[in-house]
Structure formats: structure tokens, C-alpha cells
Image (cartoon, rainbow, N blue to C red):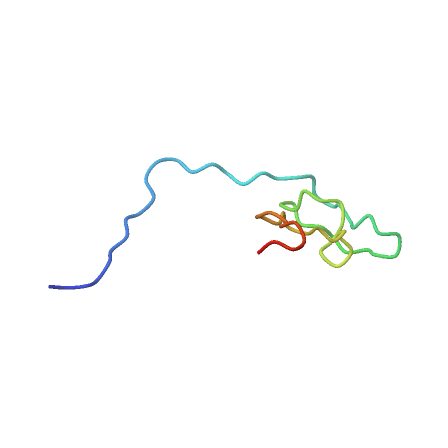
Length: 65
């Protein structure tokens, strides 16, 4: 018996990617990087504010565990 997996093509209509205005540049004062029409943010990757992912789980009280 074969252990090969096969996938199927996506059926139906796929939604087009959202587009934003052309010609936008990074909002950082000293940066003139042109932003992609698919980038919804106002900063380029280099100047974007740092975002930390949500941490799952819970903090245990001191002395337990």
C-alpha cells in the first residue's frame, strides 16, 4: 500500500488581496521607502513599532508548582 498523500486544488472563487493607495512612503521622518500597495501600515518594516505576540497560558503564583 502506498503512503503518498495527494492534495486537491482550491475550488471556487478566491477573494482578491486588499489594495491600498499607490505612492505612499514610510511615515518615519528620515525614511523615503516606498510602501507596497498591499502594506496597510504607515511605516516600512524597518521603522514599524515592535509588537509582541499575545502570550498564552497563565502566571502561577509564587511558591506554587
